[in-house]
Amino acid sequence: MSKVAFGKTPDGKTVDLYVLQNGRITVKISTYGAIITSIEVPDRDGKLDDVVLGFDDLTGYLGKHPYFGATVGRVANRVAKGKFTLNGHEYTLATNNGPNTLHGGLKGFDKVVWKAEELESGDGPSVRLSYTSPDGEEGYPGNLSVSILFTVTADDKLKIEYTAETDKATPVNLSNHSYFNLGGKNSDTIRDHEITLNADRYTPVDDTLIPTGEIAPVADTPYDLRKPTVIGARIDRLQNEPRGFDHNFVLNNPDGKLTLAAHVYDPKSGRVLEVSTTEPGVQFYTGNFLDGTDKGKGGVAYKQHQAICLETQHFPDSINHPSFPNTVLEPGKKYSQTTVYTFSTR
Ligand code: BGC
Image (tube, rainbow, N blue to C red):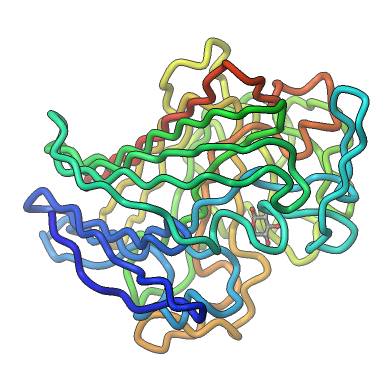
């Protein structure tokens, strides 16, 4: 475990980068945005490469970008029209995605500086990042204390454990927005990657990507990813624009125990990523809105379908859908979610 200076925010706050490694994999985490800036893992020949999109320096992250590696909250994903009613009170959030609120609003958890504490847990090197979101921040009720423990384990897992507590009822839905390309930094799109999702159902959306409320079976649709599926060929069967997956899949995880959600394989490098989570859903997003304008690490222009996101979370707009799993955290209760990314090769 080591810590390096990453720079300063425009208002003068110091930002550090924590480096967690186990001798094979190295993960870097910035205190700005609790952002995972880099994950270096070996391919089948032992060659290391960085498998997440992002920038070489803090300046890149301070600019506008689509949440590369970021922690998203207080409510990840969309809230329809930026409005919800809780305990008889209507709350209004800033809208930052067409008519809706996305990933916490104008200044979400991806744009604040987190406090860090280095730990050497039994499992491996860890860093705990914490942030208290004040009552009314981005329109959300209650002071919410959030803590995230990132650990790199001896068996090549990156474990992320989130907890949160509030002093007023508030919706909470935390996730990480890493963009994975298992081919590494200079690789082409993820069209050749194979994906398997442990999901029998998904939540269909309207054209602003808000769930209609229906929970539909994936069987006999292009959303059936229960067997290893080449992503590019499957994207070509979709009808949405910009073309690609940007859907919440309902995980086969009825009791909220840590369960396998996704398996991703890159046949070229042999790298495998498995994602397990305690969450009921995963937003599978294939970088549909990337269009070459974001220039990332090494100046690479990130094009459409350059990477995939597997955002483990509660369903989009849950706060406005009583039939979806509950996202309201009450005072005196503890929010927790655990997601584990396991890296291997074949
Ligand atoms: C959303 C996409 C969005 C992306 C970047 C994903 O979680 O579902 O629609 O473009 O985040 O903001």
